[in-house]
Image 1 (cartoon, one colour):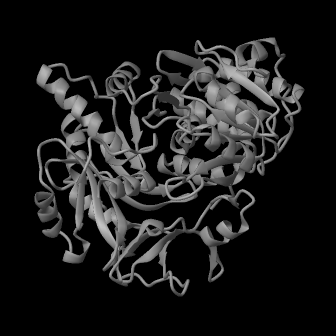
Image 2 (cartoon, helix red, strand yellow):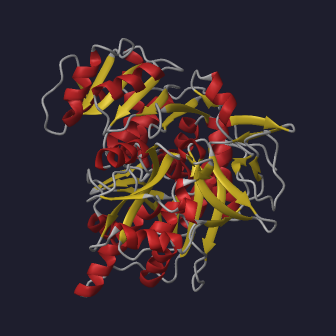
Length: 543
């Protein structure tokens, strides 16, 4: 296989801007940005960052909702050979400070409506010397500068030599512990994302920057470049990673402009821009999306989805009933369900082609290079073993976690001379490659010596017709150590015993929740992933 192109993403994107300057790179809500504008604004920001002491290797934090400035900040940091760092816009001041201090950020770009938190955190973020505030109607924070004034006043930075070892840092986790900075060298990110984009399309992988631009332009001129809508916000790594993969194929990235997940806006964007691919994160996104379509169908106003070729879910399982719902409204679209992580992957794949019956929920196929590792011995388990193992994938991957050798060694492991990324999802792989996902080992429940993985119980709970969403945790139990507890939201009056019966019909008795806590809504992070700390606290409070 051809070696990955070892270049900075800034240099690659500059080639894309040169090859198709008037092509729309990004759509965010009602705003469309061409490559010409995107490249110039990023170059102006790079110049402004350099004037404020931000040099190669320094970190630039982004505390932003979806907006053009978010993408400019990523590209501008890349141009300056700096490292963009995502910060969750739901974080409070102390959490913002934790990320910025952990990353030793030199600058932060933030929306004014989040300014009070930045101002509170500023005193405890000694490395942050540049505050750039994006104007959304809030007053300027003390010590901050207006982002638009800084960029408008700057001359575009000249293009420079860069390295494929420049870094993107993605902060992930935080549902069971402090977020960790995943360090992705650009060369490895190209190998992980762009390789799959080219190979999936049956194209040769470019070996020079000029070939990247020429290939993108050719694919676009042929009318086969993607128009990719990402439902999760930019501050979640999925959106940025998919943007990178779409750009090299001459594509356009479409993002929601709302500060909440607005399904009416989403389907309007699909229809207006001829979106060919929607990317989402499991049922947390799929259920409101299909509910919107069902309501539109009852009203006789279903949007035109004829452009849609693919629905891709990653990061959380997409249930079989939601796949059927997408098939009903877009029968021409393939549905791809992936298990991936910020640390790499994919670890498991489930493809449903048009006209096919979706497979059982949470049943996947292992791609080449994916194995399970015995948590007790650290050895690769043979396929067909019924021992739950940790899913592990070889191939391009991050260099590790930022300044955390212990966690790096735990997640990125050498086994028999092969480096694997092992983020902690447990599964079994059958002889035929079928993967049965069990869930994240860090939230595995030990009840009376039996190990229960939340994912399989959550999947079973969602088989109940009234259960909308579900999270499973362990709560302290005097007899068993931990008691399996289901926290769920429902669409109709339902008793705990009824939900337990549904689960008991599908799983061993010891996996059936001893407690069922029904809440108005399950809290999830904006990326759709479960927050097990919230679920555990909620369960304990109710019980």
